[in-house]
Image (cartoon, rainbow, N blue to C red; front, top):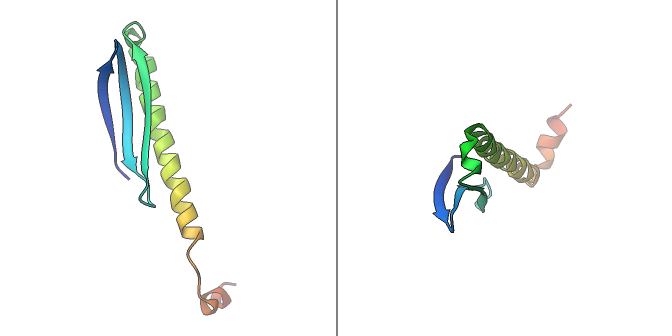
Length: 82
């Protein structure tokens, strides 16, 4: 699933927000904010944004697994599994 990272500023704080859809159709939104002083440490900001994307991917995988588990399997298919 593709996610969009949006950057915006409010009250002197720079926010990075990740938005996307999960496989079941629900919306996923997470954000992190940094002060101007914290933005000087670019490697920390980049690491946190990477973590946001990783958390989104994990949420997608979890929801996709839940959707797959909810699928009703016909009885004849269950009998073919050894």
